[in-house]
Length: 297
Ligand SMILES: NC(=O)c1ccc[n+]([C@@H]2O[C@H](COP(=O)([O-])OP(=O)(O)OC[C@H]3O[C@@H](n4cnc5c(N)ncnc54)[C@H](O)[C@@H]3O)[C@@H](O)[C@H]2O)c1
Image (cartoon, rainbow, N blue to C red; front, side, top):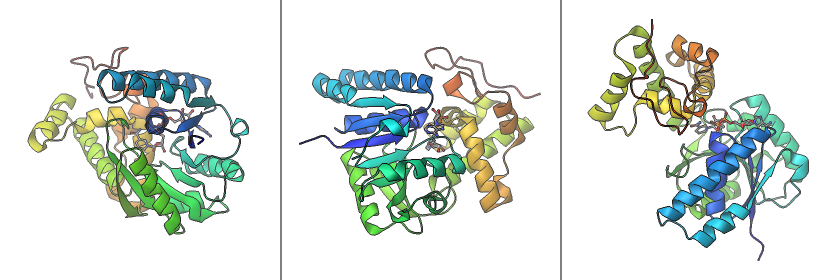
């Protein structure tokens, strides 16, 4: 029997992890991104995660080799061909970009292909409005790093049908993820809370309430969070975080107004661990440099 294949659109932080999850789940993956450097970085990173999986005894060397050979990096929809079982859109957090992707990919999709978006906060209904078959569009919100985070938040848009929901559940089970189902609301359940927490932590840093390290330590040690909110923002990317906050501010109101320090950080290019600089600085191996927490003057 032919292996099922999945299209992942966007080879950034999340596209890399999502592509790995489906490869490890026994699917072939076409990973699409117009940026050749992003495709190269993603292929290398997927190789590293597969190697780690073998070293930790999570998968056999032959399964890892099969997974590696199932990856096909492509730079545009014209190289895709037909027959994908699932598409996961995970390009930048921008409604117009996501709608354009839906428009350009839909003609290549079969009647029953599920078109999932990994948006952190945007309206599934609005993304789906670009599709002829809006009933096939659904949110599948993964978490970073995908290989470690167990949850997928499935989000129903206004027109998402039951068959699409059932298929989204099936795909989560297939790749070993736990899922929850939420009705569409800005930021769903997870981003709505996480954005607020990160914004408040950044506001405290901005006001000089405490150092970055001490704010993170307080959440880790007082409330048992595995990471502090500033460390988490560095991992997520402050550019993505800012886009989410701007959307939540627009849709849910004043309490989500982005902290000016986040806006300044994005302007300065301090978008987080992916570029080696965020609230903290990181070395070439992605390890945090001790004592590097941002000082606000
Ligand atoms: N970073 C996180 O922790 C996180 C968690 C859950 C969901 N998300 C969501 O996942 C999506 C991607 O976030 P990310 O952190 O991977 O961003 P990223 O900046 O790391 O990567 C985005 C990628 O999209 C590519 N891209 C831009 N336009 C494209 C197009 N038209 N077609 C294909 N690719 C295109 C870019 O070249 C880039 O490689 C966003 O919607 C984000 O909100 C992010």
